[in-house]
Each structure stands twice: as structure tokens, then as C-alpha cells.
Image (cartoon, rainbow, N blue to C red; front, side, top):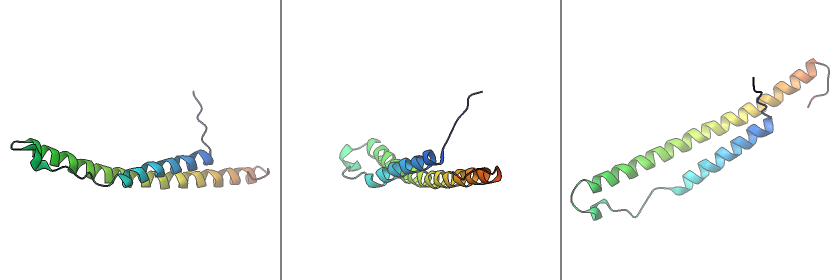
Length: 96
């Protein structure tokens, strides 16, 4: 069976990386400059409006989920440190 090792530092770095992605998405802001009427008559203008609206909705949703994951990674990292310290203390060794 494969063994996976995860350190508290790895989880903190993961949280930092998730924050960078979230910040990038937030910086994109809304897509502007597209005027659906410029596509002329037909269904294209409505389709463009739908795509841009969906992009905005999912961009914001993803940013919120990334923030939750960032907080979870940081909490897990702190938990790892606490467990390692308690195990070391229980076994009579020095705390990490």
C-alpha cells in the first residue's frame, strides 16, 4: 500500500497557493467591453449574455470555495502540529 506523507508546512503552503489562485480570480473582475447588441439580430447576443453571466457566477463561487479550502488547509496544518506535539510528549520525547 502506498504511503502518503503530509507535513504541516505542506498544508500551509497549499493554503497559500489556494489564496493566490483566489486573489487572481478576484482581480479578474467582471468581463467588460462586450456589448451583446453588437452581434446583431438572432440568438448570439443572448448567448453571449448567458456566457458572461455564468462566468461571473462561477468565478465568484470558485473564489468562495478556494477561501474555504485555504482555511481548511491552514486548520489541518495547525492540527498536525498539535497532534505531533502531543504524541511526542506522550512518548516522553522532545516536542517537534
